[in-house]
Image (cartoon, helix red, strand yellow):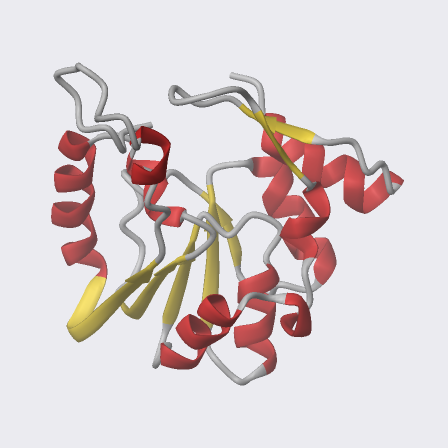
Length: 176
């Protein structure tokens, strides 16, 4: 399988190639995702992400960490944070950027350690794809949480795309 995200992050970081990353979805035309978004500094992050980072506590697992921007902020604030990413090239970029603990793994198979906070930002919960996978995901992450642990994620409401009514499909309209 091609590592498109990892290649885009690698090229941007090492070659300063600001080539666009195109997101293909089921609900409309492809959308451009500027690669530099993955390399934001704390002062460039949206208020919602900053609020989420302030809610973190204890040992943190940053799931789908991308280029490691959130992990770096947490690390700089003294957190014990592990950045988890399925893309090996992205893990290499995170390490080069200074993330102390960056691991290449699929969250659905990851079972190393227990955490106080599981963090999934930048629409991170979307990695589940479907409602069926969401249930599998939630059952799995229970095994990664310490007692009293928390899960912090954000999501996009795409209902605005269906002002004329939801599509006639057997699937939930928000599945990716």
